[in-house]
Structure formats: C-alpha cells, structure tokens
Length: 137
Image (cartoon, rainbow, N blue to C red; front, side, top):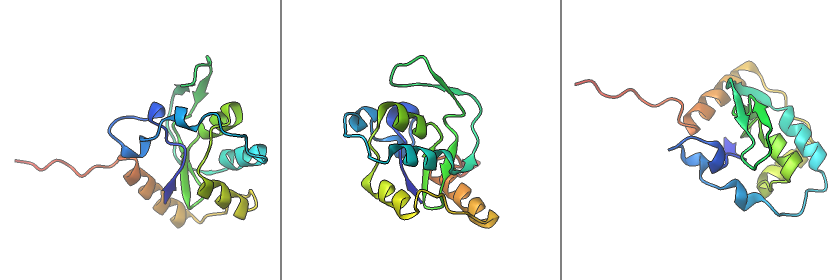
C-alpha cells in the first residue's frame, strides 16, 4: 500500500508517513485533469473514519469535516481532505499516483470486503494506529 498527501502539517507525531511539508507541494502547474483527479479522491473507499473537523492548514477559515479520515483505491491511501487541497490550492501529487489514477480511467476500482479489511489493517499499521502492547513487568 502506498501513501499520497499525508503532509506534516496535517498529522500527528511521530508517524513518519507525515514527513513532507504541504508547502513543498505548492506552486506547481495545475494538472490538466484536476477535476477528474479530485473526483477520484472523493470516490475512494473509506477505510478509517475520523470524527471531527480539521482546520485548513493553509489559512482559510474552512473546517473540513472528517478531513483526517482515510480513503483508498486498493493500491494507495490518502486523507479525505486531500481532494480539498488539490481543488483549492492545486497541491502537487506524486507522479506515480496521478499515473495510477489515469491508468484506472479515473474510476476507483471496486474492492471486495476482504480486500477492504486487509487495506484497513495495512493503513492502520502504516499510520501507527496499532502499536504492539507494552511488555508487562
């Protein structure tokens, strides 16, 4: 499972997946197919629902309900608020992710329940949601 759009300003410490700054992903030329990529992000399968409203870390007064929720297409995982940052600020995305979206013809693949469960477990591992219990003394 690969990650896209987990920016430092959005995440908790110490998850290393949140290493890149969103500011390093600003200023690139917009994708010619931004609306279709935004729609793809919005149509991802929900893996992890996170209650609450996240602030727009780039300065608007917007609050993004469920923004920290995690979505997937079976190969990639991203936060639900990534579609907002792409549509509003044209954040750049990895070339590999955009190529994957295009190869899927902008349609999120259908996944079976066992595939979604496996993806959810992997996403939780990547994001550090499940750590082994501390040894008892």
